[in-house]
Length: 347
Image 1 (cartoon, rainbow, N blue to C red):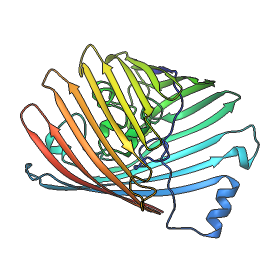
Image 2 (image 1 turned 30 degrees about the vertical axis):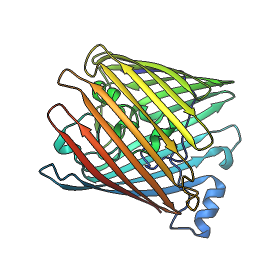
Image 3 (image 1 turned 90 degrees about the horizontal axis):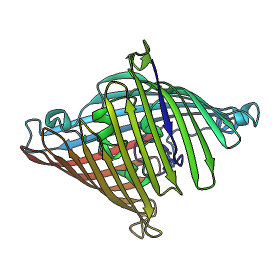
């Protein structure tokens, strides 16, 4: 069965995201720049490849050092420029992943990295988006984490829960990175309010990201956001239950942006809370494109509460981003410190 998602929110995307798996990721520069590529860009055809490599050191674990990588390729056709101003955009994205993170051993719910996924090559998203005045409709293979449960300052943090929250991933599972599901979404923006609705397959049967069957389950999500700052949402899965959440995302001043997200559910991860802030761009006078970020995430489960802390510094060097981070995983039976580094190259 197809699942319906109803969502009302400001459709936001953060250009400062540090992973191609996060919504709104935009590279400031690329290694490969040549006339043919520039000409294609001008015509509305864009091909981009981004490779992100991560290293984790966790001396308290059996596997003290772990590494992982994500190669994401995106192909965009902007028919607005190619054919007619009345047409929209087609996007196809694929992922190739290897390695892992300390979460493979810890089995925590938050996840050390939002890039980590089972080894392999797969289709991530493939959709066409058509604007109809203030209404925009998107159809194809979609991922909920690219549109829902979103706050700008979280996109510069490494932890998986600072994408779509671990409450959604733990209670529902898919469709989130690295696999989407067949669906249709629509959003309507009027003034400071944007309303969205989407339909997803709730089962997610696939082979390398390509749907192999539909049903029998359905998923419903709803969200409303006011002026990019306050969002209220919820979901219902016909087999896995329901949940509600609140998102606060606010600029405290020109260089400081803070976030808070709260979620509740009657089963599974019953309570979720995260909060944090991002300073930048330009926390240092000589580094005008860098960021400092901090995040805290709390999850209440029957098996015991879990807390994650992260602080990170993002250093941008044209087509290369280097991002050292410190994480602290506080589980019921152990507390583990993690030193991480993410390096991202755009081709």
